Length: 152
Image (cartoon, rainbow, N blue to C red; front, side, top):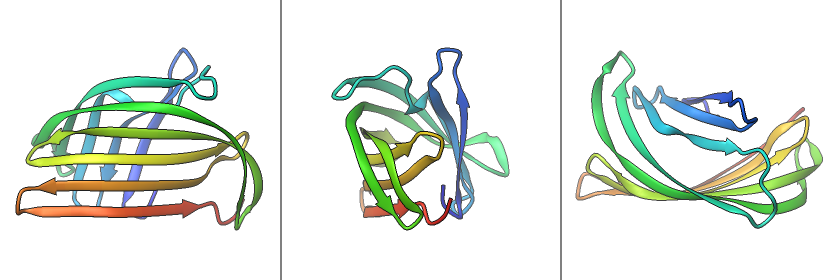
């Protein structure tokens, strides 16, 4: 996903693609969500939204049994629609999914919104992630990140 973020995905028997864990080697943690994060749900129609609630566990990579933080998130996964997307790798037909979630993990309160464009036979061709994470006076993240497919 990035030089320091790796997502662990699998297909469910129903055909959904989910991401059960994410490692952040820059922070030295593995984040496990139960149930897993929806990534590409099968059978959704444009405009349809699905809500979810999940438990989050943030553990150290060098000792995954050592839990650093835990908490819960609630969110909504929405199939926004279909688009023609042009990125450096070319122009692709794509579906757009929006993921909005909010919750508390350890001392942090987080509000995130992600927009993911997927193209059949290609995968993710573009994404935007807006993050707002605050943990009292300890830290604050307020960022917007975008990524596009550079080559196919």
